[in-house]
Length: 77
Image 1 (cartoon, one colour):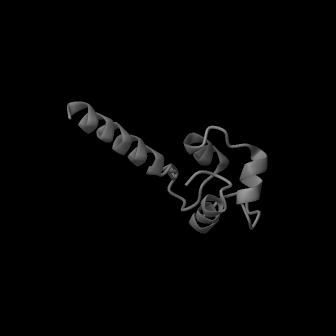
Image 2: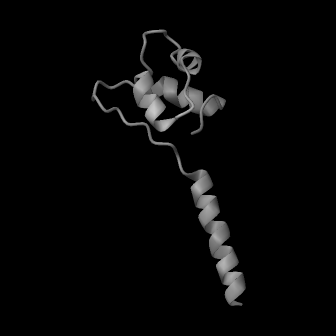
C-alpha cells in the first residue's frame, strides 16, 4: 500500500510540474517584454522567434502577443 501511495504522489508531482506555467518578468517595469526578459524565461529564445512573437514589430512583446504565442505553441505556456 505504501508503494502505491508513493507512486501516486510521484505521478501527481509530475503532473503539477508539467502544468506549471513559465513566468516572464518585466524587469524594467515598462509593461512589455524585451528579448532579454523573454530569454531569461525561455533560454532557447532566438531573435527569429522573438520577431515572430512581436506581431506588431515594435521591438517589444506585450501581454497579448505573449499569450498568442503561448496559445499557438510558439513558446511554452
